[in-house]
Length: 341
Figure 1 (cartoon, rainbow, N blue to C red):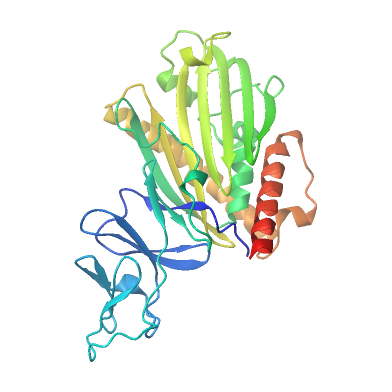
Figure 2 (tube, rainbow, N blue to C red):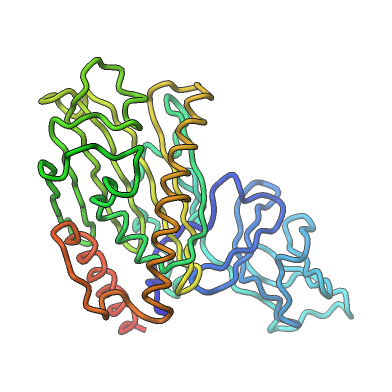
């Protein structure tokens, strides 16, 4: 499968990458991640050039990663620094090192051949801040192509059928879906005026009103970075006066039929309340792991391996516009990248 390689993908959360080597397959390539003694993260191809053993099965010696099979050591740039067998270091004894960025609570990896461009990582503020916000985050491995998950997230009309905690009764006829393009960025905005407040948003609502103007506005940046603004205000009130609960949905392909799904949700209400944190985690985990994941994996099984959804000629509905635009944008960027090499 072809991927957009000159782009930023999440390799792991800030918290999960430490002094123990972590193996992760990204875009079909095994990568080992760890931190140097000063805390700087490192990503190397997870394959020793000697016998091709996984370096992730080795151990850290200072800032160097020692292969667990024959003891060659490699620094954060991928150069061999120590050969215990005769001392001379063969010229070919090196592994690929990948550029990393640590922002917004995640470690991002650049797997392309072109020079990395930090400016291509979109602004995801206020994620990664710890002042005045509570954060709940998590990870899923979904056995499906990452573009099927993108489709799911850019068309939130499925919420009313699949996610009881976020669903609102009798809202489909009054909901409005809006597609906005800004260069390669796509916005899929969903507005629910004067609707009943969902069970999830009612945790933070703090109002006696049973109804409000709800929204679920998703921003997609290639290749699969999504920022979701979920909130509600009193009917007719400005957005700034209401509840806002931003989500991040960050997808990194593992293989053509499996995806690393990193998510995070922040709030500026009930900060420091561990009970609310746990309620949020339960609700979101149920929605993602027990409702979205089984449906998307079943969809992948129906489609089959090596088959693209659009090649099957799916019936398209009005809420599909953003997902179709994202697919076309990504295909164009991949084709342009391929033609430049």
